[in-house]
Length: 186
Ligand code: HEC
Ligand code: HEC
Ligand code: HEC
Ligand code: HEC
Ligand code: HEC
Ligand code: HEC
Image 1 (cartoon, helix red, strand yellow):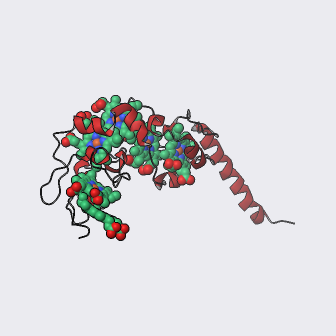
Image 2: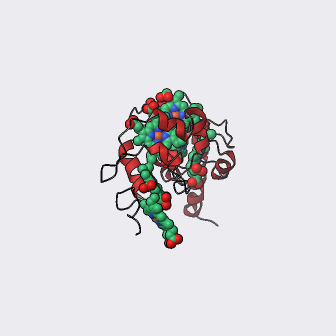
Image 3: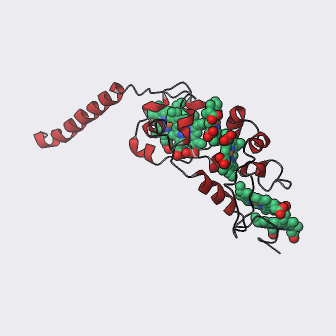
């Protein structure tokens, strides 16, 4: 005859699992993901950044999440197992946003370079100022700058210093802090 002690463990487990289930359905977490799902149900951190003036996403409060997060197939894979598991939500895979989305609203690199032609934020250690948007326009004869994309400098959901991020981006290759020839090799 099974003792009462042996039964109590599975019983408690069933009870707890039932409670969890109820809690999840109460939060209206859908069981299947689509581009129309309300992303903010789970991604509360990113939703909060919409209200933070220091985050660039603040300027995009009128845009839908999918205006930038448009890679439906990739996202569908990440959301295969729908869950509001908060531990997973804290350590997400670094995501990418197709720069074509940014360009559709903000214009091509050369247009951006024109709009920001007076900026002096990106400067090397010898004081040479370069417009950050020109590196994908006219300063890219050998396609050496093809890897540089909008979001390497413009972070959306974190408070970050644009000038610092931009200069840091250049230093990943121009490691001696100088843009001209003869600094990486003779
Ligand atoms: C049911 C909760 C839930 C909803 C709703 C949800 N997500 Fe997620 N999302 C997750 C979880 C959990 C992960 C982490 C997946 C992993 O790493 O295994 C994730 C990961 C991500 C990532 C990072 C990984 C990647 O593939 O780039 C992005 C971006 C993302 N979600 C965007 C969205 C967008 C956009 C929507 C709305 C259209 C959305 N999510 C709706 C739970 C959710
Ligand atoms: C659906 C249209 C749309 C998309 C997509 C979009 N933006 Fe924006 N963006 C806006 C609007 C609208 C504003 C606020 C008005 C403005 O300043 O032009 C804005 C503002 C900005 C600003 C601040 C401009 C300022 O004056 O300070 C930057 C920088 C920016 N966006 C970069 C990006 C980047 C990078 C991406 C891609 C990851 C992107 N945007 C995607 C519409 C968009
Ligand atoms: C190497 C870093 C870097 C990259 C890459 C970059 N930007 Fe910028 N961007 C800047 C900096 C720095 C400024 C600020 C200029 C200033 O205010 O002095 C800026 C300003 C802007 C502005 C504000 C323009 C205005 O009129 O004030 C927009 C919009 C913008 N960027 C969009 C983009 C988009 C879209 C892309 C990709 C196509 C992009 N940026 C790529 C560094 C970068
Ligand atoms: C204007 C473009 C834009 C919009 C609109 C936008 N995001 Fe993002 N999102 C990004 C970029 C760019 C990243 C990459 C990390 C960064 O730059 O902060 C990102 C990263 C993420 C991530 C992954 C976390 C990470 O650090 O990589 C999630 C999840 C996410 N966004 C959810 C959302 C949700 C939810 C919304 C709507 C409330 C939204 N995003 C709206 C551009 C956008
Ligand atoms: C992925 C690596 C990489 C990154 C990131 C990078 N550069 Fe370059 N850059 C190069 C290489 C390689 C050359 C030399 C190309 C050649 O042989 O003409 C170069 C050349 C240049 C030149 C031309 C030098 C000359 O004398 O003609 C300028 C200016 C420049 N980069 C500025 C920048 C700025 C500003 C940034 C940051 C916004 C940046 N680069 C980021 C790799 C990079
Ligand atoms: C950001 C670092 C960087 C800067 C700045 C840079 N180069 Fe280079 N360069 C490289 C790298 C990396 C290679 C590839 C070396 C290899 O393949 O072994 C290279 C290769 C070359 C080669 C081919 C060398 C060979 O033996 O085949 C030439 C020529 C060259 N660079 C010229 C230039 C000129 C001209 C400039 C200024 C416009 C310049 N580089 C600035 C990083 C740089």
